[in-house]
Image (cartoon, rainbow, N blue to C red):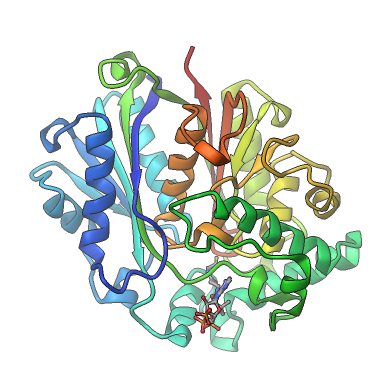
Length: 387
Ligand code: COA
């Protein structure tokens, strides 16, 4: 396998984009990524695009072809990747494998979703398709409800409190306040989270990621050629993915995501490091409990200690491990197909010392963890600042 690096990144602001179409979001993110490395469309040899549910959200399928067409990349192969909310992360992994295998030297990886063109109820149904439609959604279990079951179990087994869940949202809004690409750029307090209405007990409005429009893109290049495009390529030193049962009822435990544990173990083996070496991580906080599960299952903290770790500031900017400096899904927003690629953009900027006010000091190792559904897919990448 060849070594692979990211040489450029670009994204749109995440939020409600009433004034922009789906294709305009793709073009904005894609052109930014190309221009940042002085690349032209003809330099790209293949495109991998993450998108979860465009058919439901905007009645458009065949997203691979749309992306290549709108970005002027024809006739290169362009492949849509779907893995629910992990579509972007899995697209990144497909792009990584395509370059690592030697099939291509330079590929583009994109992610996009436009979720606000339909009503909240229809969006909840579209997102419910990421779980088990027959066993869960059909019986009324929406995504907040599924994660609420995990939160309740974690609270019962480990004494995690609603205030500790709230601390995740408070931290991520604090980070989002510093990120010009974030959907929510307002700080919130634990009291504000506690006083926001219940969506699915114990999860309240401010424990949830929002409905978001947005797109993100990165350009991958064989590491041996990367310095021809940028002085500071960021190497992907591990890429791993694991699967688990689609339905929550079929999982061994509600208090862990086995797919995350397996993908993390494999990623750390590939990267030849352990969790303690990670300086900055973008993890999948679709609900506050998801970030607590992630930081435990990735091995940053012991099982059961995640809530306390967040409450005590161990995951804040420039702490033991800076988690979700972008604002995470909670504050930066969660356009489902784009999120995994946005996570890579954020780590790229952090490791290049380009994250401005939200910069993690001396960040050398970064990690992304992107989850599909309620944990049926997890994809983990580890990144390293070049010498
Ligand atoms: N965090 C903070 N504020 C939020 C928010 C969130 N998650 N969601 C909505 N808001 C704000 C809106 O900006 C709006 O504020 P305004 O009145 O000042 O304009 C207000 O709350 C009401 O927004 P609205 O769009 O009516 O909310 P809603 O009740 O329709 O939807 C949720 C709220 C939580 C149900 C919805 O965001 C949701 O379903 N989130 C989960 C998404 C999901 O499951 N993703 C996949 C996970 S794997």
